[in-house]
Length: 539
Image (cartoon, rainbow, N blue to C red; front, top):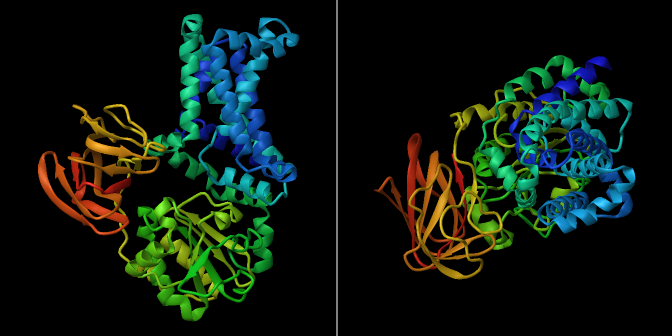
């Protein structure tokens, strides 16, 4: 138990120093500077308490009350906005402090308000998911929470609290002298951060920061000792002994739910697939990360189909046009996907599997139990060895015959969305929502930022080109991809030099630029009127 607690504490400590904690730091600092000396302790105590309780019991509680799974997070965001309003408008602050007056005079109010702020942060704090947090998530999802899981979660939360408390104390002390004058500014900071979290801007920001704690996490959370201790929490060791294979057993696979149609197959069920080894792949056809995994999936389909492997691509669309079955059918045909595709337009199967990623792969054994999972690109040989183990075979891996792109992805421009609902890193004129407007290109475009020029209609998830429509982006990448719709051309200039034109003839992902190696530059794109653009991805 002591070793388990130590692993959990160190994992939390590392997490609080990782890029995942950055989105909550502005609120932590602003909240710590707007009260007494004890307020930072109250904020961190509230954060630890809410994170601990709701990480383990939120799903069970929401199911019990028949509430949406995002209910608590939405409540927390509203609470943060209300707390921001109390700082911006003094009168609202006076009204909000009255419930805490019974706790004492000013110090009591600080503690009550600080704990409430921390509790809100605990509900929106999304730490980097390593094996420790994954183990906690598994037992919470399966409602098999025991004393070990409770102790591990508490140790993890306390480990994460230590650096955050140090930051809150240091930052609060430095800013407290100017707190009265900067109180409205702190309120604006909290409000803007809450809105950014609500719009998932924080996640895009995190992807732009290298994972500088990965090495430590690998040494601590993925050590043999940690695996043994965590297996006691999840029950994976017992599952291995029962099944006599070296893979975890995560329980019965969820059924397909809410599927609106099937491609390349008649309707399938997990029950009907018993006796087969099933690979579930969550994907969407404009996702560049998903497309990079397709050569491996197609190779496995060719190699192992006759041996009993069934691959099912669950297509959960990111954009509206990806919900159209004919578009999915056409793109799948062009991509050479011949295995069954389930159209999960309402994300019912996505939710049933509690999935959060594009792409995500789950392996299901012949008895219908989930035995292996991998999120994102990579680990192809590991995945194929798991396929072989479940099939009861040993042979050279087909993945080794697929040429993989192993170039480092560090420092590349993150994914950038163009519609106003998810736009980020935009510089230039104020965006006019759902209206045709003429924009001026910014004189200077910072790294991983973009600017509009000419006539554009900026809609929720896309931009529609008008006359002289242009776009500039400061990038670092080797390959530049853009989701486009309509018919026309997009001409590219890199640092002022013509780099060719891309002909757009349908709604899909296009590769606009492919350089010999990753480089930095200023890309200008010139669009035919009527073309729509959705999101950039970089490789």
